[in-house]
Length: 162
Image (cartoon, rainbow, N blue to C red; front, side, top):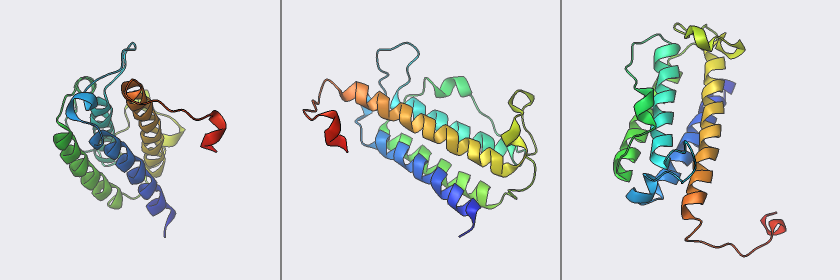
């Protein structure tokens, strides 16, 4: 298996984990942000990741003009079933985009404010997507844990986790 295929699989795996986290919540909890400053709901995190993935795989790498309202992603409210449908569509389109990308080429439309070492190639951009998905999956896991903390109590010790 080619290393670019492995990288794509890692991206899709983290995105699937994020999607499953949201799907595992009811509509109310999935759309609730914890009571901490500037926190996002699990749905908003997923919607943001959908926008982020399409931006890098569709707008930046091949240079397609794809509309995106980044600010609206953070206030998005969707039924869990609608969030899952958005995730399925995004996953499919993202995978198609990546399969049709020459990873050694430079991205076509890197925003000037994002010029960094990883924007030299489309592969570098895909690594950035993976980085963002990992970060936001962790954010969503902490968010879920904060939202469900009042409903569950773990009675083990720290060493029980190992």
